[in-house]
Picture 1 (spheres, rainbow, N blue to C red):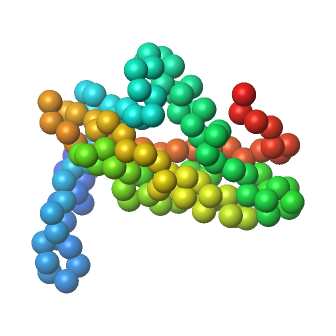
Picture 2 (spheres, helix red, strand yellow):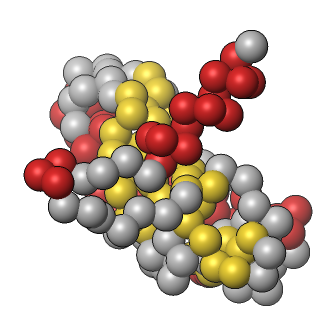
Length: 144
């Protein structure tokens, strides 16, 4: 019964009219596609090592906010974003925050990411949704 509900009502949400009566061009945002977006800074790195490459990038660019360290704030921050048809990071927003500037630091990290190689579905570049979870834990130990 849940599947039927999602199948019938999700298309209405995806193609709804914009506020004010103006139609806004909207396209489907995928979660999984035949060719997932690839983080371009990983270059020709083998597929199994790409997550490690991204982890290295994250560790080199994202900093534990000083205020959070001083006040021993720990926890998980989740930021969602979309890799669009040209590989740009768009629609970044905080889904879960622990405060003390951790959410803002993670959001700024996502917004500053370089372009990705766009994901493809049936040979066509499409928008793909992502969520990034960052676990802030003390002591602040380097990633590697």
